[in-house]
Image (cartoon, rainbow over all chains, first blue to last red; front, side, top):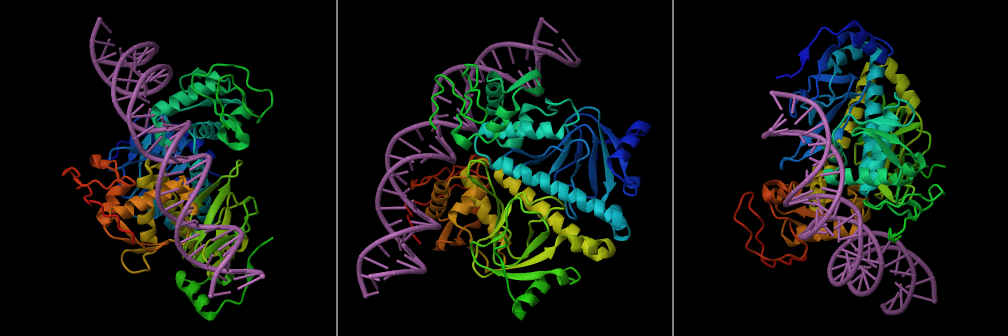
Length: 260
Length: 260
DNA sequence: CGTGGGGTTGATATAGTTCAAACTCTGTGG
DNA sequence: CCACAGAGTTTGAACTATATCAACCCCACG
């Protein structure tokens, strides 16, 4: 059933996993797997016998609706635990999206058993759960945003935050535009257009199709809360350069017909 | 700061609270408060020193965006724990929406301390957290739905599920249309129109502005996943009969302008 | 050299927002 | 008891952001 193929994890990866969690009591139960993009870690409605953590790479948690549409509820990145519930079956499927992704798998029952006697492990689990809750709530707030521009901008900021590894303002998006669209509940075309618009206005720049550099963080942040202060949205196809000098003030763009 | 006014909770309420949780170790730390609609339990950015649980009544967790718009991320109902994180400040505010609501307040630090030594309490907290995660994920899926009809229908089903207390198919909505709108990321008008359309097609009936009866659960469920099988959405004001005979049976209700 | 998946761009249709107004219900004060 | 006010709800009409349909480009891969 499991598309994962177990491997003897190289020492470096094991060390990496160990570094992710302060104490190893829980890590002793982990099994490491090397995955490629497209691998399915668990299927929707599988029994939830394991929890998983991304050691390196990236994944997506998604549900298929009756009509065949897809909803992505999370992009677990390095360090994130995913696919966990206390009982029953997985409400979502977990799929790897980046090549060379390493996943740690924890047997749920045994971890919970361990938690009964080891308060430290119990505390770790609580923290993991609370982190997960925070991530979900942040996401709720993101989805609640109305305009496509707000969603995409907020998404970029979120990714920038979470990929803090890299240098300052460069973001690597491990997921496709389709993934982003399903995550933000938008059409692919809208995602693409919005990114283009942000680029054209000098808010971001592309160093590759999936590599973004934030050129003007203030503008991006403004776009993420665009309706504030009556800011005019960046329009797709509107190429006048020179955004207004005043941050957070309005972007005045010739012929942009801003109807605030 | 706190708009709550502490009261000596009547015995019945205390018993009620006790019944909500299997064992009382954690409940001993609780303080009960009686609230009215409009009371604020905690403000956005307040330090998160307490967790709360609805003993009876209803609340909402919401964030205010820079532009003054409101996002509701949860409607905690009877039994639900809300407003908890491990550290830092509340990312949302917690507000009571129903009169005669009783809230139990738990001091975070002391509960966590208790969890260190009492595995049972630790387990309870885990369960509460996982429940919360599940509720959030369900909500994500709901928000990801595209059409207003899917959202509203799914919302009604969710409420019916959670208010299971009442008889079969009658739902009491403790929140206003505005609350629902902010919860589903829709305009109030859209919520109102959608409810009207559902009523006009005999899917639901109103026994009061905030009292709904599910007339045809199958239809409601179909509307919640409307795009499946090419089902035609219920149109506001669309009273034409003669729907296609096709799959999932479309709605046939000639001019049934029933105003319940 | 073709094939296919991902990405972008264009044109058009539509669902949902926005603006505006009226209606209901509840409470309050004369 | 009635008039009035205000919040919540519903309805109408116009507008627009986004989905949808349809090409087309680009690149990796067989």
